[in-house]
Length: 330
Ligand code: SAH
Ligand code: AVI
Image (cartoon, rainbow, N blue to C red):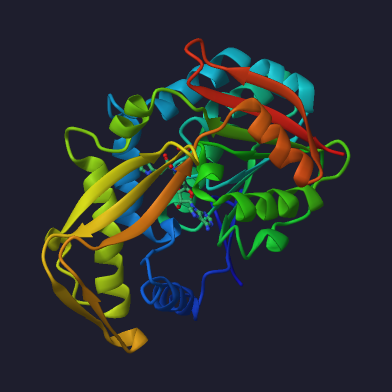
């Protein structure tokens, strides 16, 4: 672990992504691109460029989840804080922490706010908000964690008061169902009786509305999707031609999730020297790069129950697009 203290001691940043992390990418690529149906895990979208592209996605007219979740937060942040009485907020996959300010404001108003712990795999997105937030909230301590929430949850510093773990944006939907439950179980095992999980989930709705959110007219989501190929080229010396792959977004009506794929426009042979791999792509062959599962309340209650959690509160936006829920350990 590498630790840095900045902003006159008010910001501490622990990084668990030091040497050897390229190995995780290499192993994921070796696994994913040798499967009969090729796939790559979505966490590798998020280098500095990928994080910026995601930020632009959040502003797109078609991408409703961010606006819907913000609307719920604006309406219910005081209820969330009253129900949790949290002194500290640990946010997994915190990104630029834009919506988080609504929660931090409510905690400050309630007089409970002490510490914020942003946790993200993308280094740049932990640093920037950490330093901005101590300037915005006098007395706030920020303890950032740069790490992989699938591997480093145990490395989060112990709570120093009632803690809410926030996992916003619908990122839970990026896990397939079994891994989703395993991940929730991991969070649950770190919660003490008074701690809460605040979870954002995108809801099942008209498939065309969902599909458009993942295939915007300006092509930003397509660039975000292709960004993973730029990451492989830079980090592993691969020779992908990103323009040789087209963006595909399709809704699986049976599983109720959207999938993003990259489809080879023509036959291609790609070498990935750092993995010792040569990969053939037939024209039209696809690589799955992300699933984004959509929820119903019973589906989420089932996941909570399987993870040793119980839902205590559920809020949706006026159009019923998105839900925020609070869960407690059972
Ligand atoms: N919470 C923000 C950002 C969501 S985007 C919002 O609601 O807008 C998903 C975020 O999760 C990105 O910032 C990405 O870097 C982070 N992320 C994805 N996989 C991760 C992993 N395995 N470990 C830690 N962070 C991860
Ligand atoms: C981060 N995650 C919740 C986003 C989603 O909607 O699944 C990532 C994303 N993919 C395409 N657009 C946005």
